[in-house]
Length: 81
Image (cartoon, rainbow, N blue to C red):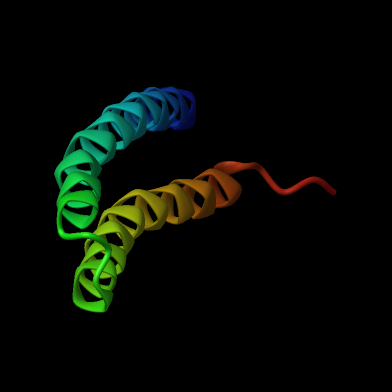
């Protein structure tokens, strides 16, 4: 039973890795309009601030799942004697 649970968790982590790659692509797609709007507005302080906030939100949506996946992977490793 433990072996099947471990292999199932391994498959889920691999799927999570693939999902992170797709999330990164999504982040690039979402960042393009923000960067374009900053360019079009001439780089005013408000546009720069909104761009930083928007890109920060995209970055957090990528970084948080990475941290969670790393934590889950560490907890999955068997303790060595």
